Image (tube, one colour):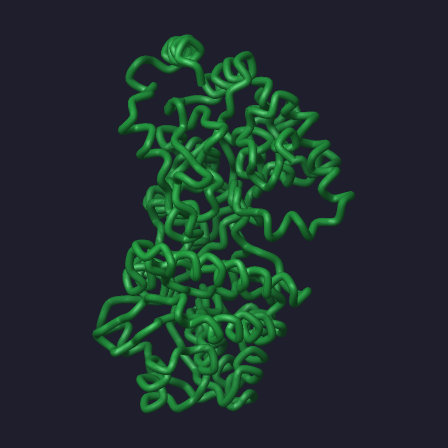
Length: 502
């Protein structure tokens, strides 16, 4: 951005939000150029990404509207950003584009909760930890606990990235729980979706009642079609009874059949699965003496009634035995340590794995139909074993060298998130190049199975978009062009808005 233009835009932004909430100094700019994806996807910032030109913090939809109108006038990109725990590059400017970062974290209030509506209305900058705290005061829960390891993540970021959340097997994904949206369009118009599109409706939050489901256009769009400034999501009663259970199985096929049935019957709240064949030799040597060469399913189950809870646990045990499962007494250990698979400590979650993998940790994620999980993982594992010298992770405490881990996260509807953790040495250019090639090969292998889709997309969407049917791409581009003719909304995300560079 040219200096004179930048000065005029900064002046205009200051008039909208005040001097305190507009920053264009280098320290702030480069702070906002770094998010969690930088380690995950092996792209040094100097290669593809860069800092924004300006950072601004709005506090209302009206301020966002004025900012978008200003950006449209000057044709400067706008990127809405939440907590910065994104892993897709979605909230980082492209090097050649720059633009304005809208830091939404000051728009973090609970706006409305009324008994009987079974929904809460909030601003997008609210963090998962804040939401849990506020809802607990009212004796309800959002059901979902947030993305793995990140209670500091914002819900707005999760909506934009189609966040996979803890407790998804029971409650569905975050975006399946969204009812209404308030969105500022690129031209500055403020719209409401669902029931609130009706001028006579004030506080009834329902999504499917006005013809086309316009909510869905903005979910998972990473701000490419507009900026979400308010949204409503479902709430649930807090289950009174819960338990952490674990079973081992003689093979992956048995474990998957059990998990599939467990979720189908609605008995599981959250689950992690570990297939023995996917483990590095160092971990096999540790687990084999403890549970044998068997697959593991560790999960939480909940209920609202004591008798139903007891019956549910009995049914689960019967189901596990149907697939030759053996119960592992983890509940007593968890209780002694004061932890649970689904509480905020999240001992099985990404926060712990992130610490284990260290600053060089990275991972790939794909979504597949659970019965196909073994095929998807097996394909990626073959590639990884052929290129183990690209892995640099190690855990000296347990003697693990070239450490990697495949984890199975369960989602509602018999869906599994294939989560491959593959560390790399960022300080060794030769090793980093090998890790980049390995990452690409693994992702390509996911797609080549024909039964999986990528979970994290953002600006790292080239693996997916090149497989889109031409008609689908044309439809997305038509929506983008109609809503955002000046291409100011997060250009490059999902491969949109870069036609002039093709």
